[in-house]
Image 1 (cartoon, helix red, strand yellow):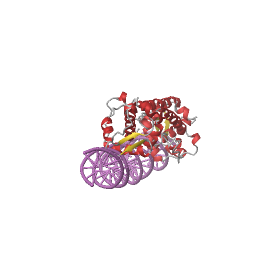
Image 2 (cartoon, rainbow over the protein chains, first blue to last red; image 1 turned 90 degrees about the vertical axis):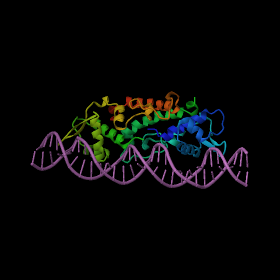
Image 3 (tube, chains in turn purple, cyan, yellow, orange; image 1 turned 120 degrees about the horizontal axis):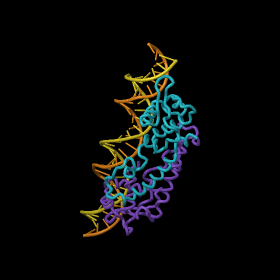
Image 4 (tube, chains in turn red, blue, orange, brown; image 1 turned 30 degrees about the horizontal axis):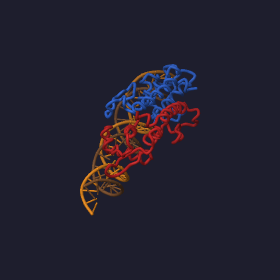
Length: 136
Length: 136
DNA sequence: TTATTATCCTACTTACCCGATAGGGTATTA
DNA sequence: TAATACCCTATCGGGTAAGTAGGATAATAA
């Protein structure tokens, strides 16, 4: 199941991508528009900023803004930052690989082979979908 | 992430599918071969039996056995029984649909549209993979 | 300079779920 | 009737998700 953190994060990013100007948007504004608790949203946007997806500006008129062009932000990036590995098991993860304790030979493991297929499919969807696609 | 319950369940099912005879296989036997704790495996096999995927036989020489032909057991069935919904969000689930609280219009929700794509892809993999495929 | 705005950051709480274990009960068979 | 092996419920520790609290810090405008 997708965490609410990721869900809210994508919604916030989409909201930002839909803005006509590049001006910062306050947490409060995004919170109201997308029905997300201010405090929880705050922590999510902070994560996105620390991972180079958002920029921020303090003080009056401050808020968050996209650093990159929406079409240069693939969902793989967003998912990895907010949700973690895209793979369903560590042993089929590209970026967070880890061997299974119980499995003597990965190539002969039925679950491994199945989950590689699922990962490849999901990866393709996330790679080919950018923030620009979602904000239309 | 895939739960160990599902992972072990698939491994056990694959092991059963590889048996040459239809004779019951004891929990202990599967446990040793697949490196799964006896007690945990017990609860998993029980779930599979209650959901009509396995049959069982008590007493000496007893154990668990597949009810259906492996090629008639698609992974969708196994996944739904052990892991739950295949969809990543209730609002894109076919069998466990639930509306989101925060979302006024699903059709306009970016996350919704994205996750439908992911679900469709995963569904296709699970539908087209049977226990027979995995046990080869 | 000072009040206001809004992000920054840490810590905490609450609830839930996973993985595993314990300890019996029950049915079957040799 | 003893041994085997499934049947079933309860429990527990640890971890994580979701959200909350409260103040520190920086920037802006009056």
